Image (cartoon, rainbow, N blue to C red; front, side):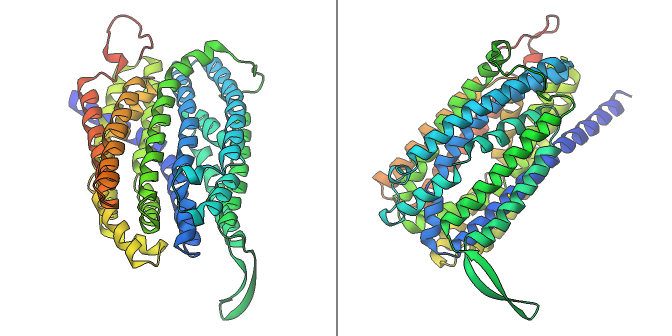
Length: 470
């Protein structure tokens, strides 16, 4: 009977994981699909246009990852409150998330617009693409308040177990983005559809049109998410105070700040990494930009499962349910490893074909396919790191991930890439080898944390109620 019950619990755990993870996965699939379409549509304008868009992408990651770090604090607090059945605390936290959205979104808008003109220069982009890259960045990040709303308030909904609403909002945003791209990037032109010649209107804005399309879509998405949270039956901030509430903000910040430092320092590392690749020339920059876009789709199972891992472990922690925690977490890694083996194999097999979708340059295609096949081999190992990090975020343990990621990024990826590209004169393949070495280090460190049980606060005591500590 015991074995039968354990098998039943394992099946139930897998069902729970997948039911929570699939909307996030579908949302990210659509985001990646749109990213693919964006890259292909801009790529049709030429290698210079692709490089102009890709030059500032890592700075965008820096901005977005910093905002996401704050949302992780709310995720940990709200998922734990929901697990404990404390809906009053969850609603108060949702109101503080709204307050944080206004504060963070306002600051980020000022910074991105004010610094947009200097960023391509800091990124060591070729002089002839800097003006287009600066205009693209400023337009894209002008609606930062609404982008912040999507990220922070969307995480509040996910923490409450509602992953479908952000998914639906994301699908609409992505469809709007593609439709606007079609009309804003290209000029008015004629095309033949079903044997009939049609005149299609277009603004002909090029790279700026791609940025404007995304900015409009993100604005609509931020409004959608805010309205969905306002109407939510369990965690709506209606009737709650929007003044700073340190009883809520203090534990959220205790989780968020290490994650913020981790993401900020890691994103600075990405900026340094990308600037060294930009210094290798236009071909390397274009190949790197396209390969990053292609690779992002194959991380979807990892990050979809990470959201489920953070939410479900946070719920179990709030309910002080050791049995549920054990049943859920013992299933995350094998499910994730299986999914990432599948996606890694697909990436390895389809790398040249996918690169060819976004570029007509044989040199860019060959270089991008080579680095994609290298990284495909490490996908399952990186997936383990993603899952264990998600479980640690769910229970509010963010200090160790901070240390792990800083060591990997700066001591392995950035330092190694500097030596390879700036000292030894090697190219993009060597830089991506350093990136893979970084991922392998994270796999080892997170696996040790998982096997030792250091990530799990419910393992620490059997008698006393568990107190949050990191």
